[in-house]
Length: 139
Image (cartoon, rainbow, N blue to C red; front, side, top):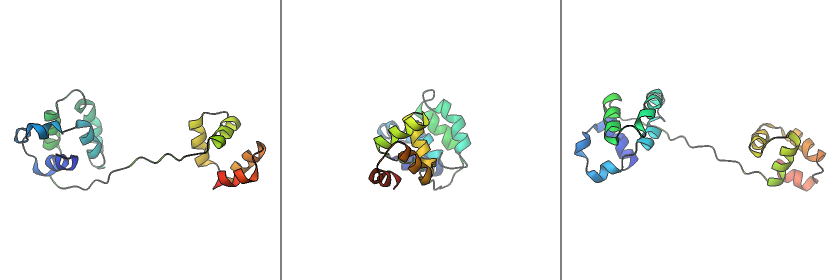
């Protein structure tokens, strides 16, 4: 069974765990179920509270039973929330930012998202970066 079929079983059909084949039962993942159910704003607090018991402590059968008994019956649409893509920065630009602000590369990436183009240009000029590279970095 797919994750979507398991979510439908938990929220709509609510069949008994024993009605699934052994192969289907092996496809149940408490972690993925928690992740998908947490995408629903109404379930996020319940899932957050329950996940400390669901992963590692309880059997998949118990997790399925608890969610299917506790959560209301009905079809729901939960948009999957993707993580933000990591912006790629030129290593030379990151090194200049690290030196100027005396910080790590991770902090330099965060600063590059916040700094204005004018301030970035000033910093690059201070470190003797040529105009061609400055235009490339400021894009």
